[in-house]
Structures are given as C-alpha cells and as structure tokens.
Length: 440
Image 1 (cartoon, rainbow, N blue to C red):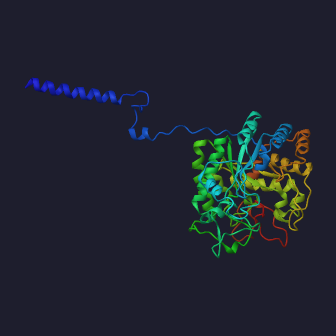
Image 2: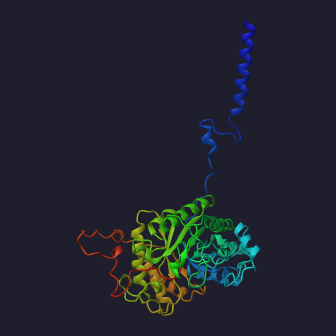
Image 3: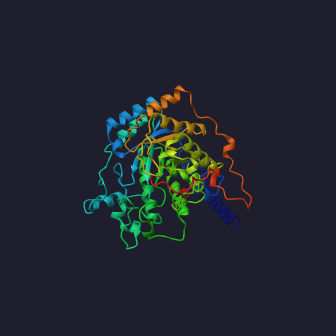
C-alpha cells in the first residue's frame, strides 16, 4: 500500500514541476505578478507626440510637387525664422496629393474617365515625389502638417454616390461652386478620411489638420439631404467624427488640429454647421480659428470695417476663443491673412501688405499666442518677410496672455437687457446676427 501511495505522490510532484516550468517567466512570457487577462491586454507604448511652437505657411499639393517652389519656400521660412508648412494632402476638390494604397483611392482610379469632369483638375497626383519633399523638410527642421479637407470632396461622392450628400430629387447636391460633399453622417466617409490621414503619418507628417470639418454653409441648403442622417445633431456628429478619428490616429503619435470659423469664439451655438469650439477642443490638440479680417462682415464686433482693422479684429477674435477654451488644455494656432480680398460689399476691399500682415501677427503675440499660420491660396506670401522683419526690428514677441481677459463676462440679471455673446461690442445698426463667413 505504501508503495502505491509513493508512486502516486511521485507522479503528482512531477506534474506540478512540469506545469511550473511551463509557467516560468522568460523571453515572451508574461510577468508572474499579474492576471493573464491583464497581461494579454497590454498594448505597446504609443508614440510620443512631438509638440513645437509652429509658425508656418500653407502650400497646395501643386506647390509641394514643384521642387523649385519647395526650395523657395524653405528659403522663405529660414529667412523669416518660421518653421512649419501645412501641405494639402486632400483638398476640398477631393484630389489626393500623392499616390495612396487605400480602397477609396483605388475606386476613384478605376472609374477615372468614366465620369465627366470629376472636378476642375481631374485626379492627377499633384506631388509625384512626396518622399523627396518630406526629406527636404526633415533636413531643414521644418515641421510638416497634413491638411485634409474632410466633408468637402468633389471626387468621391461622384464615384460613390451612396456616400454623397443629396438633393431633394435624389441627385448629388452641389454647393455654390458646383462642388459635391460627403454625407457627414455616413461613417464610411469617416474611415476614408482616417485612412488618408494614416497614409500621411506613414510618410512622415507630424500633424493632421482637419479642414472643412463641418456641414455645408452655402448653396441651396433647403434642398440639402443626408441619406444616412440620424437624430444626432450636427455638433455631435462633428464631435463623434473627431473622437473616432483621433482613436484611429493614436498609434501613430499624430498631433491633431481642426480649422474652424473665426466667429466660433463669439457665438454660443454651432451656427448650423456643427462647430462648437469647446466641444471640438475635446478631441484635438489645436484649434486653428480662421481669423481672416476680410471675412468678417462690416460691423461685427462693433468694428465698422474689420478688413481695415486687422489688429483689432484678430485680437478680439482670439480673446473670445481663449475664453471659450480656458481650462480645456487645447492650444490655439490661428490662420492669418496673407492675401487681399476684393470688395464684396459687406466685407473685403483692403490691400494686405507688410503692415496688415504684421498687425495680425502682433495681435496674436499680444494675446500670448506664439504660433500662427499664414494663408495665401496662391502660395506667394508677398510681404511676409518684410512684415516679420519689421516686428523683429521693433522687438515684438509673444507676451503672457492677459489673465483678466480670460474671465467670461459676468451674467446679467434676469431682467437686464440681453448682451452680445462673449462680451463683444454690439453689432452695428442694421447688421444681421453674426453668421459664418463663406470661405472654408
């Protein structure tokens, strides 16, 4: 009997020893001090975001594709002490700047030529050697930002009408420029834009900048239909898109920014386009308000002609944006005007040279913001070097943000007359409520 017990005991001990060997820690084995479920769910560390104080210029895909043009831009940035470029990766006409191996791009290529006048330019790749561009920027310590127009897209909706915003007759809806839009409610459009952004990150871009991250503002809006529409309001759709794509971009260490209308800091609603500045800030690292003076209607902020008062309009616009973002941790990097807009009656009409450019940058610095981006659709940037030289000569630099200006205005008593939002001056007599500018 004792011999039988001895044999059984020996077998048990041997089994325990074998099991112990299999569970021992070693290369590839989970640590012994944690549940297996926790060890299996451990993820590799995410790439660290590389933040810098970016001061840059905007470039089309065509400019990025021209080697001489890129060399000139690098020279301009070095001469002015600037350090960043925003390059179109997908513009509002829907064209992608460089070749991408993603399903939607393949669908467009397959149907190319079958659709009459897809857009103004067709689907030609605008930059044949993006690797050369990225190497040039890296060699010169220039920070690359990928601009992606989200829902304004004049190509994919025509190739994939099931993803398009529609008109009341069921056809593809077009804005004032006869350009199509993706249906913001259609989540395949979200995946498409995320895929474009991921391809940009793989090429070496450090930041993804979402533009046209909103609903349409012009054209026959009463005739506009969204086939995938739900009960979700526009501002929630935009917020959900940003949250969804940010998650997709996290493994790539992408810094994320969003272009918004300059008036979002003043108004309290989403202006019908889905842009609520504080809500957008929850899922981006930077808010980039487009505070172009020429795009404010006369009388806005109580300024008779904002286009002729670049310092004043930029200063108050950024002040209100800072108030809305106080405590969120989201940074501001404004788009400033480096172009002249012809007189449009209610806005525009002033020439923009070095004094006007310098005034906008000074207003930005006076708000304690050290970063800015210059928008010139023609990518010429006339007067920019002279403007920055004059600021340097005067010793004008970013200063601390005035703390009192960040406090929201005190609430008026219930029986007091209504005051403009954001403690802004009243609108000029006869002017309508602040509506979003037509551009971008």
